[in-house]
Length: 110
Figure (cartoon, rainbow, N blue to C red):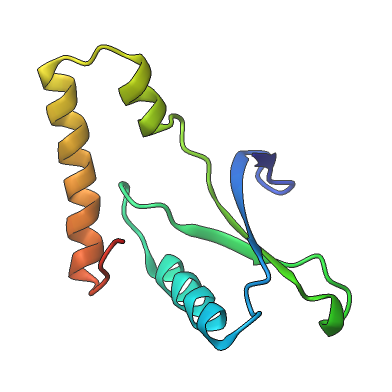
């Protein structure tokens, strides 16, 4: 995680290494950016910013995606906590709400 210098809020940063190394990678990168740019739902991560550290086109080997930092890691919660049936139901409901939203946008989660 990092701190946004403008908002002073913690954010998550995803590094895409060599996102344009081939036509397949470039298309995948473009699709991810396009999709994240349009996501606006409380149960779906949205894109805050995109940046690259390269000072020239020849050095353009990495791309960084900045998103909101989530307060918890679902995998960690499921593995480390004893969840009640109500809690499991709540988590599944939130996941399905997000999935319904992205499906309504014509996106299939892989």
